[in-house]
Amino acid sequence: MMRPVTAGLDGSPESLAAAEWAAREAQRRGLPLRLVQAWIWRQQDVPVAEDLDTQKRWALSVLEEAKDLVCDRHPGLAVNTQLVSDTAPAVLLAESEAAEMLVLGSSGHGAVAGFLLGSVGQQVLARAKRPVIMVRTGHRPPQEHGGDEAAHGSGNVVIGLQELGEVPAPLLEFAFSAAAARGASLHAVHAPDLPPLYGYGPAVGRLAGQEGGITGQAEKALADILQPWRETYPKVPVTHTVELSHASGVVVSAAARAALVVVGRKVHHRTLGMRIGPVTHAVLHHAAAPVAVVPHD
Image (cartoon, rainbow, N blue to C red):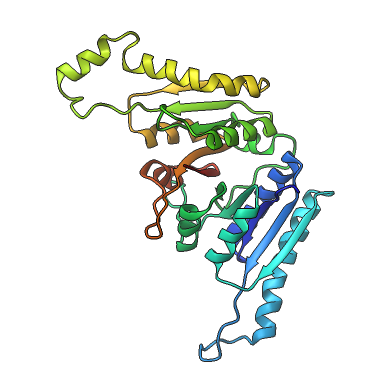
């Protein structure tokens, strides 16, 4: 059974943007689309203006509006809707386990044109077991061929690789498959970790004295890591960049004209805390393009 591309709705313009993005991605990949909304009847002791039936009709209307929108723009796309009685984080986390990916809308953007994550988004990003894509409001690429690409210039997929020792396969698989689905190129970026004593001559001298220097060694390692995936996806053009700079800044800079940015999140096997990592956190807050956060061990 094919996993759907699932979008979480809440009646906001941001969630409609997420539904539109999810519909395009589902069509590209030949997958069904699932639209989900969490809804809980408020208890009698909580002062509310609406009764149960009114609230439920509103929640159902949100789903129907989104379904009508995507069906009108993507005729033939298989679309399923579901209203689930539970809290938003619980519903979205459960849905993500059965989905190819979960798509959410950001809560807006500020002066840096990035994402402002609400509490629901933070919880889902930190705990989801499948890729989560954040789409900011206003991201409405044209509907002609290459819509995402037309909206973001080069339209490539950018992947940020933090460590080159053991790059997780799920991260590379998602990035290459996303590029293949778009007929786009993939650009991998990496900022090498500098030694603690980088400011002192001996540490720099030893590394720089080795063949290729710091960046040369990292570029070779990155090329070696990408080579098997180039062979698996021969139609995806691949480029890469290595810079001695802050990792988040390197990724955000490369993503300025991208259609999609792919970053990873290590899975933390613990019940407390909601960590997504400093680089991923920075990219989410500063990238204008949709950001895919891929969990991995």
